Amino acid sequence: MTIIVLGAGLFFGSPFAALLHSFAGADGFVALLNRQVLVVVGTSLLTAILATALAAVVGTVLGYHFTYRKKTGGRWLKTFFSLPLVLPPSAAGYMLLLAFGRYGLIGAPLYQTFSLQIMFTTTALVLAQFFVITPLMMQAASSAFQQVPESLVKASHSLGADEYTTFVKVLLPLSRPVLVAGVITAFARAIGEFGATMMVAGRLKTIPIMIYVKAMGGDAGVADGLSLLLVLLSFMVLLLVNFLGEKRR
Amino acid sequence: MTLLLENVSLQIDRNPILEQISFRLPVGQVLVVLGKSGAGKSKLLEVIAGLLRNQSGRIVFGGRDLSALSPQEREIGFVFQDYALFPHMTAEENILFGLQARQAPIREQTKWLNAVAVELKIDHLLKRFPAELSGGQQQRVALARCMVLRPEVLLLDEPLSALDAASRERLALLMKKIQKKYRVTMLYVTHDHNEARFMGDQVLVVDQGRVVQMGSPEEIFACPVSRFVAHFTATRNILPGRIRERCGEGQALVEVVGTQLVSTSFPAQGEDVWVCIRPENFSFVEASSVAPPQQMSDKISGKIPGETTSENIISGYRISQIISQSGVTVLVELLNRGARLMVFVAHREIEQRGLLVNKEVELAVPANHVHCLPRQPEDIYCRPE
Image (tube, rainbow over all chains, first blue to last red; front, side, top):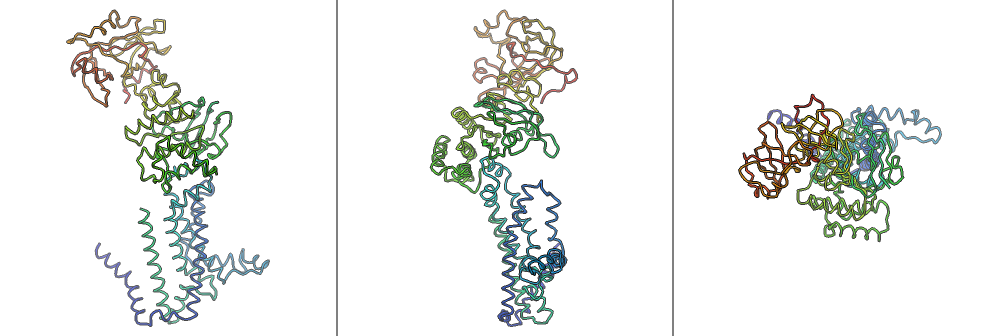
């Protein structure tokens, strides 16, 4: 047991140690202070925030739907909406291309009638991240709503509150910590999304894409800095989510 | 004006939960729904409140068919077993929830809130959250939350089950008072026969989703229609017997535990019966050692078991156990003929009569308290438990 724990610690620790070592050898975060990198960080933040906001609304509604109105749709539909969680991100990105590309199922008519191009724009980045993180949000919302005792919902209805009032005044406040944790996790996942985003990005870059490009191109300074940035962000997110979880208890 | 249920049936995932439930309850009365857990009592309330949809049958209140209405439109109060207070709201916010959902004017909200809070003695608790309230206080807030809406029908699902004995009594009295004052039609679910007797104008006994018996508490307790009802209403003595003779004048001679008793409540046909005698309907007559008090010997003089008299005397019993239970003493009697009778007497009587374990006694029971139920010959030896 102890050996496995130690071995795992060594294995999981080594990439972090290597990153810190490489980062310390270079000129720190100074490498990030150029226009190109700042634009990428800005794009990443903007798209991740937009995608998270969208996913927070849609995921919460889906979670509510599958918790309280199971009859319409049911298990199959919920499984379908969960698919992006296990789908390889590159496949997800490719499928988005097929759907929204200039010659795609939906993209073609959009382009022909409105000369609207979605792919290889910021909108595409948002859509790709939204596609990947919405199931995450849906599951968080589902479990949040399931924790609210059924009798509270019934009490609300019997006191004359309609479905919307019950949702806003009873369900949302009681599941807020879990929902917030879900939103934070979804944001972290969105900003770190690589595969699907890469497929639809075209010449646009987000932080993970930039890391890939710079690492392959041998520009260690930027790759180190950005990687460390994401590591720190992820760490803080996990701390925050755990903190919220403890507060609830 | 009545609350009327007509052949209401409910299935959940194709399992029958309620089957053909029908009853008629006059407005302003209390109907106690009595049954074991899992009998469908709570589901019956949820169907009436519209929280569950019955697949067939009608629910009508005051001439208005509620069957197709949503819970909000039915305006029926519901007090849940776990109180279902909103934990993120204060008592006051909980109570005002329904008025706000109905968008009642603020002045009216305050008026009703204050009236109900004073009435239910929770006016000093309004700023507290449910977690800061005792069980009894939570229950009163839950009751207040329904009563501010002035419902015509109030459904209560085992409202006292989670409380200690003292709060239980207090709340039962309070609920009865409020029910009387507002003449609210009440359905009260419980598995406790004492609550049923105290609260109910009518009692509906439910078993496995079906109505087994409905009647006044007196009827249900004195004349249960089946061994299940007899057992469930705490008829502690249910003994196999045989009807020897139907003597006319509404009396029958029934043989039970080696003696013959007169009964005025018996099936028209069949010999095999269950003889039900409630433990509180016995009185004591000493057989030996101590001379019976004067008035008692007068009372039983000239009354011989088996004759068409109203008092039966059962002799040859020995006290086997005296169990004290909150003021009422439960006395288990063991007969040398192998049967057991359970008798309730007041603690005082035990002292006055010097009742001791192993002492022989005679028991008297009036004929109208010997209730006979039809029995299949094969289930003679299975004792109800």
